[in-house]
Image (tube, rainbow, N blue to C red; front, side):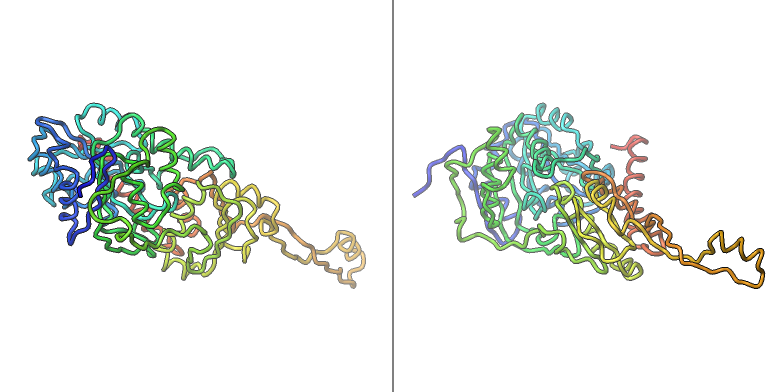
Length: 451
């Protein structure tokens, strides 16, 4: 017996290829003609994160198929848009798309959204006839996985602005992030949402880190209600959606709801997959020759520190052989470091709460002659003055302070690279300069009249 249609239909497809899964989603929801009318102007929010690749970015094959299906349904204009990510301006990404014969040859255009520009995206979606979201799902340290509701206002981790210090118990960082992510959907909900979890970056994701692992679930989820689509996605991935702050926040703002979801397609319970999620305990991220110690840590410092430690683990493998030992102290009142050298204090809480810690001061002994003995030796040349040991206190210069709550990740990488120098940290030096080169080159091209 067929199930009655409701406004909360959520389709789950499982197929032998991503395109077959996508086509099955459209078939279950009613084909593209149900969503697109003649001469509609379509805007599609996607994921494009240079210099990352598959599966951090939205599948190019899926983009190509979606453009074709929109054109077939009668759309007059199709635009795809994404923010830059990890500090890289994607002004030149259209060349990559042209090479892959995805956007320009099919009559679509790519829009480049400024970082953290909610107003720009809002203007675009308010002036289009239909608003679609095609979201690549991977694991995420703060929200379990990269849900479609995170796609509306991608948070730039590498170039995020330093914020004021947050109350540890209030967890304002996560609350502010939820509010920002949901602000667009509060003003306009998408007309079609696709959560692509056919391939998922599990483990250390969502980016391509050393401990990231690609798995194939063969699953895709689609619908018209972002909360319902993300709710089902979380259930498929073995998580309780009602514990997810994005789901909770969306329901509180009446963006969508989780009641009476009508699942069509494959059975949810029998399709659930086992996913290895991000480490919630920073000390459990093993970095070679690195001791990680945390105190009370807000979600903001956890979030940025998580990415920092995985960048170190991924790109500093050779560097840490030269460095031999370092300690990273995170949060309020962290334990003392194992050694007094190469101590990285990450965040305002770690810096302030360790001001009087013993590792901050270096004590050295030096032989000295008291002034009275020097005078006596002048008048009694045959008598040698007595030397006494004198203790000298001085600040430990092998402590690196990383300010901010949370710190800016891009600035953090620069500070660590400068601290160790090119010889001790060649790989980190190369990584940082590569990211800077991407940003600088794309900015210059943009000023010369690029997109």
